Image (cartoon, rainbow, N blue to C red):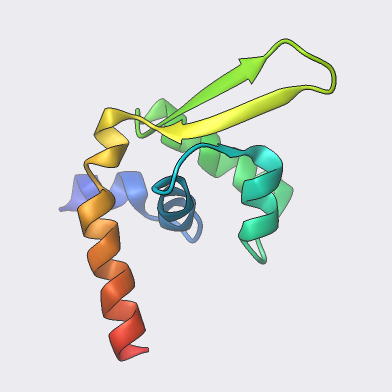
Length: 93
């Protein structure tokens, strides 16, 4: 449990993962959807999630620059747990 929470803990990581459960998102979409996250924290969280193999980052060579984030197979395996957390929150908060 400690290792798992070490990977997904933090104020923004689970929120980022939750938004990516519904499909690929561009950086701007994530920034707009997640209220209160600073640019620094969003970038840091995305890099950590990518480093841990939960999300992938795809950069397109075009102008303006386009970057998409999506969940990896490993990240998608967290979707049922995230759905349970969402359900619990809606019921109890």
